[in-house]
Image (cartoon, rainbow, N blue to C red; front, side, top):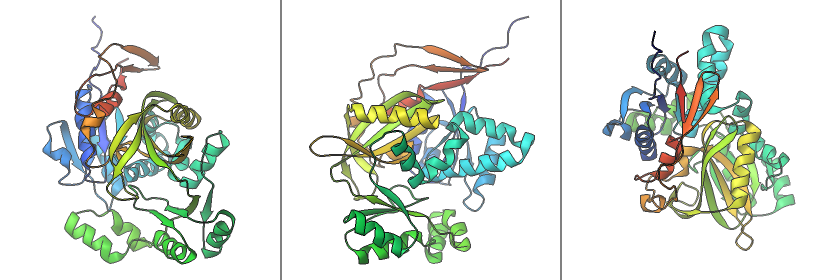
Length: 376
């Protein structure tokens, strides 16, 4: 009797809450890298204008976990790739929900652990202060950081660390929840703004005009954000894009930020660089948190020494601005397809190869980190 054929086209489910062009580029790259691509996304997402996705389900901002779990049941993916930070946090919450279901939720738990890494890493990735404290403990260069709960905390922080100070809110992404303050009046105003729940009128406008319901729940429940203060590091901004599997970096590319649309927004033009400290930091973070999937790290590089200060971890799709220069990325020295290596872990094979060309080569590099399901 002949053996059952191996499925050489694993299915990846891209889940996203934002209508970002980079997520569509990611889907195209993964399809070219050998995946069957399905997606969960808001209506009118750029993915819908491509032919790379086999099936598309719509993300529902009022019931995000239900929309994700329903899509998982329908699409039955081998891997899940979040396209933005909010999608990642929804997946973390879905894991906890499935875990409470016991045996009934075991399949979702296994899928999310395979896709994102060790569950113990989830709260560390979400909490900015906790992540930087972890990084400090494992010997990585990070700015001084403290959780700020009230104006008195902010005043104490400023008295010890001076100006300018950087305030950041948990649960924000794309530079939205970041403020640089240069006096106490700016600090108090920024603190109130960052901690406050979304304005109801803003949430309604997003729902009616953009069909984006993600703020409705937070506004209705009056959810407030935790805020951290971070010492300001002058210098050049830099970022890393990382593909990893079970605590091992499979591919990592490092960039200096050359241009941004807004001072605290995503990068629009990047320059590929070599930086040993950024490479070591990526390996240390991935190994220490036992991460899997795609991740990004943000840095500030000191102007004279070039020392890299790690300031944040975030979703991989947010490593690239909406108007990312593909000409720069096309310079990535990936070489031609040359290596194909299989690593076995229970019923799973991970095969990866280096790809040479394409309009989005950094994502092709990531798309080549494949996980394939074997039939027993």
